[in-house]
Length: 378
Image (tube, rainbow, N blue to C red; front, top):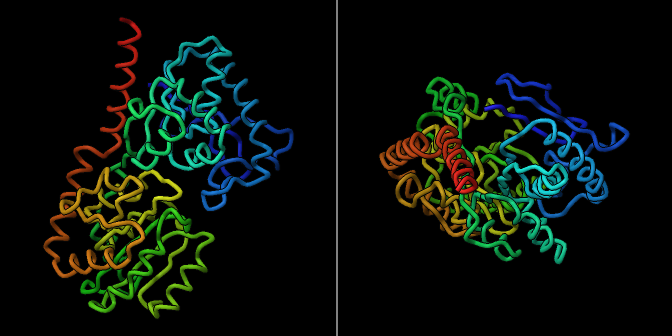
């Protein structure tokens, strides 16, 4: 397939015009000055809840220019398919650009999470956005929470599919060497249990639930360490929880690291935690599937799409959101039975190889696209 990525220019995040896999990348400018290209790339929403006011002012310009340039691109190159990731603004742009170009291109929309938050919090304007987005030929999201919010916004439940983000098994896999090296760097022995969390420090990740669970875990097991990769505005809140419960010694904060280094920590841990919260709604975090690709057992909440890949009692356990005591009980249960951890980890790896790798996800999307083409030709 010939692939073109169409994305807005950004000050601090731009790639070459053609990447190593031959994918063409178009970074379009929407403002006259380079310094004003600040929209998107994880910086436009505060804690994934509120839109940055300055970026909100820039959004109409981004969309207007994006619609025109995308329409010109559709007239120039006869694309078969637009995969619009982030419905706001990308699906809105795709729908108007398709009409402007008199194109018959199919639009497949995927909702990561924050765009759904925007739709649900814009009132009547969000309802209008939902009506426009409904003109997509196919819609997908990666959690039942997002689906419920989209239905509340006015979209038909029957046209929304559930599709997760896959994992590249060539990049993410267990390494015994990296496990030993990383655990040594963390000053933990093979007799110590390592719990791992990875993600931005925002409310919907639910990390505070895990921090609050440590006092219960520490009451049953002393030789464990919670390793946390990431950063964000909630760091002070997390530190306060640890000071209050006198559990600082059980936590190591790594900070932000390059994506290619994550595999070291997946390999080094014994259990991966994802204690997501329901509000604001979130999709499945890809770190869960990546941990599974490294053969890790998962302890996660029942929200945030976790239940799409974590099967309770099979490759991990699910707990109620905002329930640190229940999370602790499941962790204690697993740490007391290393054979279960090993068995569940192997099941995680099996699920990734069968269903949750990018090859399988890509094939699923292509099948959906071919179904659309078949219906069109009838």
